[in-house]
Length: 447
Image 1: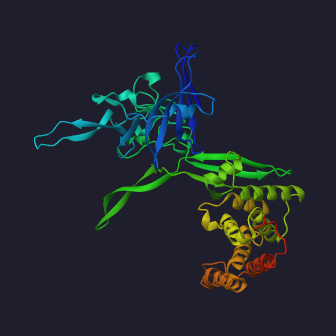
Image 2: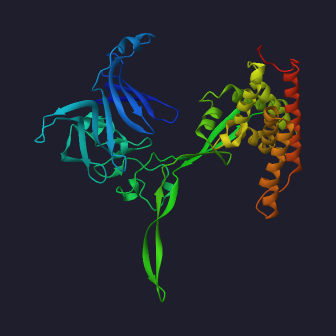
């Protein structure tokens, strides 16, 4: 991402480059002060669970592989800036990684304090209070933790919210909310629903819905169909209503929730799955192999898959995992394959889950759950033996599906699940036999 500053409108004055991670967090800043000057790395952002500060640098950008090493021979104290924020994420104070000695007090001992680089107090809608700030323009981020664009309107008077620019002096965004049609009760220019004491305003695109399709040639297509703020209805107070007796009636307001959600064809998804299906993130080798197999088989069979595809696909995944590992490590490889498939490993569904459910599933007998039954039984057979695997498969079906079904809250007994379990046991026995007798049936490397 790049930002260019022109003044007047046709003269380029300053250029800034932003290096970001997959979630959009800024990792590093590169700047060119004039059109003819060198590009320098000026900032590296520091993160814990969220941004906690910035390290300021002055390193000339170079394509030489040794440039970074040559510039990092010494550690320079005082270059880090750590931000102290309030409950709304407003940056109130930044301190450096230097300690400042304090003279001995009347109690007879000296202390050391953190070096304060800048500080600022804000009016409710984010304007910096005059007389209650110090060196306020020295840090990139300010109100709500957003980036200040000081070149436009002065220090702290214009902020970048991703989709729109905000002016805290007038408490308004400078352009219409892209989601205005979903919130007709709000002004399309308002900030934090007019309540900056309790609310913050996000980037305006926190829920993402994608449509996953595949061409006849097996090419995966991901299309963003909608994006919107996630808005919750919360109780903010109570009012008293008298119906012969006083009754406390809750007062509700809508509030913007800060979480992010992703959906693919109506199913919850992780950001990782979205990126892998978009092609912006490289999947693990076994996941990539599984994606390619579904695409090839979809193209070869006109989008039709057999009812026992779970067996063929499960075997394929296990045997992809066996490639390049020692025969003595086959159980370890099988464990990794099972963890790739197991829904419990993936909070919002893996990439293979979304591929399988979107393209392989024809009906209830061909869904991803049948693949789970096959791979689980095969894995447990390889690790514990067929009897234990059979007992675990039966127990799951009896206590997780059949018994709740008796009370009308479960799926009930499914013979197709038990058939998938037996298919997995048979495959697991085949693998065990090949390892025990060293038949060379699978593509292990030499021990």
